[in-house]
Amino acid sequence: MQPVVTAVFPLWGPRTGATTITVGGANFWNMSFAKCRFGDLAIVDAQLLSSTALLCVTPPMLPSTLPL
Image 1 (cartoon, rainbow, N blue to C red):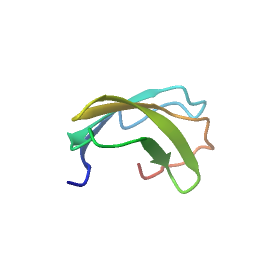
Image 2: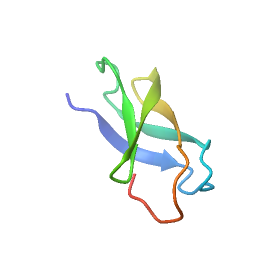
Image 3: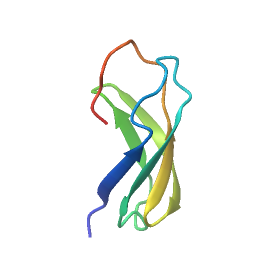
Image 4: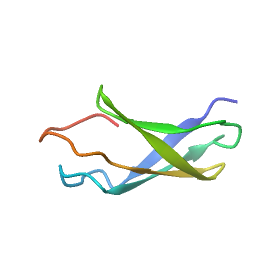
């Protein structure tokens, strides 16, 4: 089964980065590595907590609104 994201919290953070984002969903177990993407350029490693949750720390970004 493919991983599915159902929730992201928090939705906002400072542009300086270092905000821990919790990603909720399903089917995260069978991932050999996990990543989070912020906008088109910023990709960071994720910490797999369980089959339904992972954590990512935001990188520093320019002021803007980015899709997660």
